[in-house]
Image 1: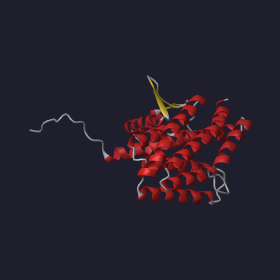
Image 2 (image 1 turned 135 degrees about the horizontal axis):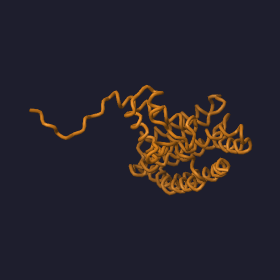
Image 3 (image 1 turned 180 degrees about the vertical axis):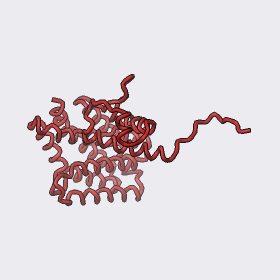
Image 4 (image 1 turned 120 degrees about the vertical axis):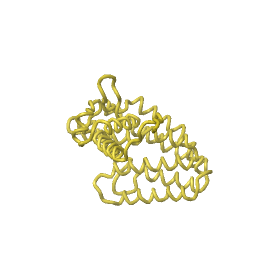
Length: 254
């Protein structure tokens, strides 16, 4: 006689694959503003378009909710989250200014040789982006920004700090701001151009971007074991980013 253990059946590998595909697809649609901020996200429609059932689609949307890209509305389903307000964006950078300088300081004391090599490899990867000749490398540099700061958080040796940084999804929000400017530039040229200039200044093409230059300095201080310098450089880096992008977010909110 086979007894019922009371355990729920395990999800099939195929369902995980479908949920991953749905997650990647819908995430890209939201980041590219194919699904606009505040727009309803139809489970049935998306499931049909991807030829999957509602179950993996719901799993994907639950992950996107954890990412802060969709919100579940009672009795209505999901909708794409709005872009951050000016106050939310400022709060995000203020939070980063509390945890990331500490992470850089600790990384200078606790990082392993492999972690320092990972930081150096990431900087080399970013250098290759800056000389790639691609018309706009902003999205690639935003991805580099994400990886670099995550590596520093990991090198601090604190799982809590690493998780806290990852869960801010800071650079994802920056990318949504960047993509939003591409959509508004035709209808509001002055606002769109202003925000584009903010990104161009920070992730400029043709030579080493300002963001990368600052990352190189931070990584050198970490590798050299200079915690005071590493923490100070990280704080300056975050504060300069905040001052640069807050006006851009203000322009978009306007």
